[in-house]
View 1 (cartoon, rainbow, N blue to C red):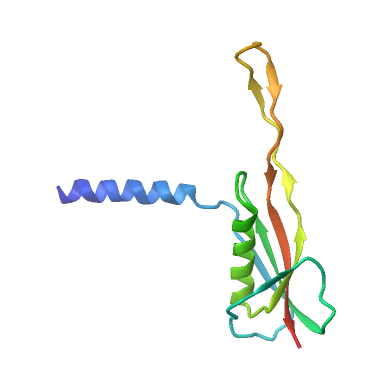
View 2 (tube, helix red, strand yellow; view 1 turned 90 degrees about the vertical axis):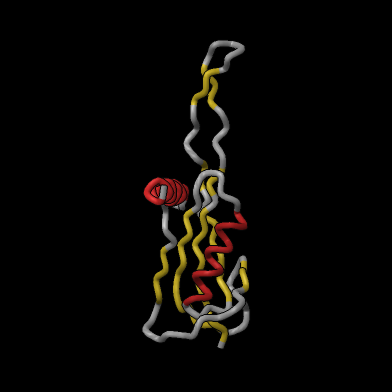
Length: 128
């Protein structure tokens, strides 16, 4: 029985691993100075008027069907790890490729509208 339980556990682990995001977040630090992680990262649509220093860039490509909020949460988490106070967001979302589907009523192929794949690039900043 224990061997069977181990086999079931391995199947579940591999199945869950297959569901994980296939596109990793990419973090590039700008400069050599390191900062302690922060607790809260503000998301900005444009550069702030108060003085700041750019400390890195975080790319978070989304998956088809991903929610915008999920991708933004990943950007915030990665920016917090490098010590950012805020992230200036750039939307680099794109449309997924259109997929032809058979219409069972007409017997013809229709092209379904392509869903939007949320993806963002964030410039991680630290206020002076």
